[in-house]
Amino acid sequence: MCEQPIADTTASEAVAAAEERGATAHVLDGTDLVNKRTTLDGIAAVLDFPEWAGRNLDSLYDCLTDLSWLPDGEHVLVWSNFQDLADHDPKAFNGINSVLRDAAERPMCGRRFTAVLTRS
Image (cartoon, rainbow, N blue to C red):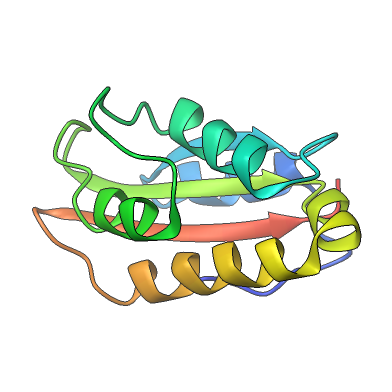
């Protein structure tokens, strides 16, 4: 399940918690990601999306519920400084956050996806 932002959780703490339970952490530094395009590009980069992946919410969902190019197990997107996008483009933030939550509820291919949003 995609966790809601927790002000007192840092990206480092979220990575440590993921690794403690055997998950692979993928850290997205959201500093200066102030629009939908740059944020989708950032997520695609840290999760090593295939070249064929599009940069829209449907493709984001498809990739997050597949992750077949990554090793089996849980993969955690740790999105630090998510607030930059939330402040500059609330509509884009809400759309992306909704996809993160939806994808976390539908694991496939032996891989589980979760997301943790942190302010730092």
